Image 1 (cartoon, rainbow, N blue to C red):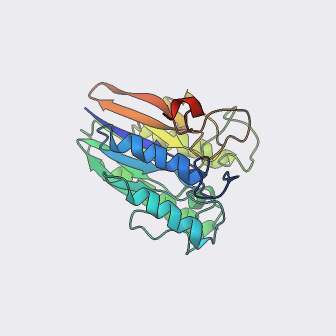
Image 2: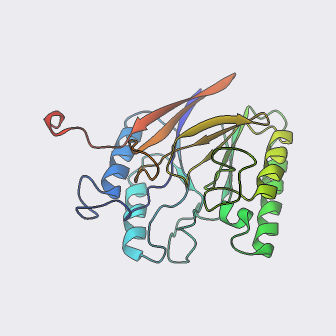
Length: 249
């Protein structure tokens, strides 16, 4: 048994009304997530993209990387739509994805921006190749297979119209079939800044609001703590908000 954390959309700079270093800033919420993780016996951390808000901001990039560097466990990340500029991140695990074996469970990081087709047909075809190769390298006896990506397949309905919040219709159906046939345990994503937990075509899809801000209805900024065991896994939501003033003492 082991645990990992899934933090998505820290989006440094999006929701920092009193500055990037204030307690109510994106960096402050990310720091609280890191502090919790460092004291909770967690093995790994996965970032689900949109690590910064302004795509070419070196200041935001540096603040994200400094916050991630405080983790006392390994971390890995995938890119979001705000992470596609060369200046955005400079960590070996971000933003090109990863394949990781941890205690018999496999983690596959996907560049959903490329897979979605946002970067053009050639990067899309290349990312499909990367995904197939990664899943093909997972042994049949793997205990679990987790996919980490930024974009969710859909929000409300698998046949909803294409939008800036989901995968395109043909891609989402193709991915769902591929994930099901590949025995994927769960797909973790972000982007929408909303918590959703569903099963579609036999594959569990979990979306997290992230640690920056809610977009669609009031909800606490948070991250996911996942405990993995032989017969399954459990998911707990952990707040990244500052406690009320009377709890600081």
